[in-house]
Length: 480
Ligand code: PLP
Image (cartoon, rainbow, N blue to C red):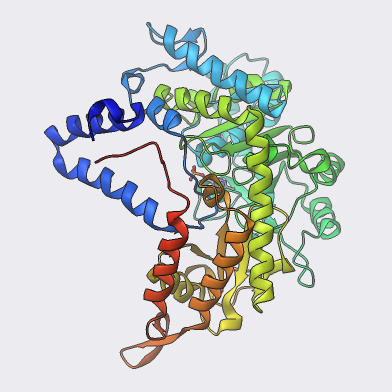
């Protein structure tokens, strides 16, 4: 194909790869291979998506070379005029899109956004009163004794977050993460009978525990959370409500989650990633009410280093895309697809946590197939279906092997697949899992080894490839 007939995106990537190949050919080859692999596989990872070429291109440039500690118009470095432009634009798009009073777009990832939020609340509710008591303006003005007291107080606060096996996230106060080392944490779970958040139990626990922060939000809960009720509970016990909407930000942006299910009007502070259902670059963001804005803007240097201007540029592009009317249609299709996938699985006799879904994800309990999540994940991958294993509530197989598989529809919806294809995918998943049995390692039963019935992997992989042929990924990009 002559250059003249190639799309500008194909040309951009061909030239970029030529430049990379000239320095390190293996990296150019890996980038090309990644596009190939993503095109070939059926991606059901609930936390992944496909960002637009414009978003991807906004990230690969000389903005990466710039240091810009500080905030728009108030930097610790000279020459940040253009960084100011993209950061201000990204923040404005975020505020407008979500109807938020304040947006901070510097966090490099979701975990960073959560750290910024935790420390903003600690600064507002613990540090500021301590400074006022000591009649000091800045922590540097405290004497050694007051400083030691403040450090102890900062380390002696409580957090209430959703338990991991109910779908919560490690950054919501669990010991392997710094949040669990910073806070004394107590978890709330779901009702064992329904699998739904038990607000009465949560309220009782909050009254006893009196946390500084209640964290709502999840990575693997297939239903909606009522943030109005969460805020009422938080207010009653004097806690700040923080919502981590990393997973469902796209559904909030696309106005699928509104009223009680939209966290922005209810929570004092909301964090998110930008790369999951929101379909932007890898990164994080904090949205908050005005009262917390000043503390949130201190994310750098509190827990962040210099911002990533190239990623903020890409956030501005992706958020501009999310403000377009098409994004609402996209968000609705994510949920319609998740519903169709759940229905298709239920019709084939599968067991789903909570019996279905209201959002972008489905949690399939694979114990009814007699296998672990780890075995299911591996068998599905053999058939070119990419998922991830996930604990289910009260999971007897623990967090490593698990009894569940988490399935999400944001990526396939971006690719254009619809409800009819979701039913076909349910059939492919069921075929693989029904054809999988536990294997052995060294003659002993294993939670990882598995046996797939003859021919199933090849047959389903072939059907997966045929299905995806109708939905080309990055159709405007031809690497040659
Ligand atoms: N919060 C939630 C609810 C998540 O699901 C995740 C990622 O899986 C994160 C935070 C962390 O995001 P990141 O990987 O960008 O740090």
